[in-house]
Length: 173
Image (cartoon, rainbow, N blue to C red; front, side):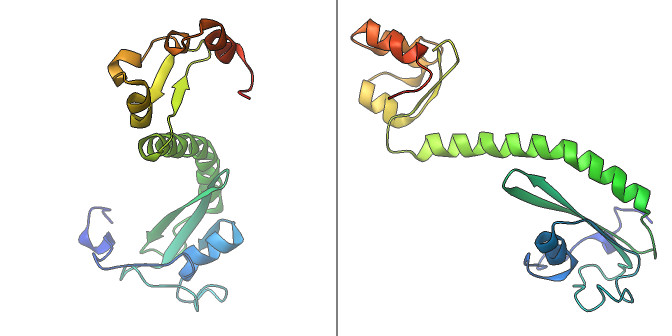
């Protein structure tokens, strides 16, 4: 069947908690599940939460990246639609994808932290060139973002020796 069919779209008002259904089971147990028939499988028939009218098979896979957790859930109208080999192949692919997801999340977290931090925050390259800063930094130092980006952090210290020490230090005291 075609994936673009309206039969394979969730209702606009559909909601599911991570505590419910096969998704909830995979979340709690942190293990992939391949259910050949969601209506008759003895382990899952009582916890299955109908989302699509025609679902017969469900494949649900955890995606872990550090402390982050996502789920990939695939439903099909055919009984036993997914093989164990397909499940394993998808698990290998998702292991690769998890690194990308973690880096993307960390980048978004950094941006949000910079945006909402009330203290001055400056992100530099290993060589000490300013790559990012927040609005509190601009207010404190009196320079615009454009005036500071790609400039050496040393430039903004009255005592250039202290600035050089900051750039060369492994840890900031």
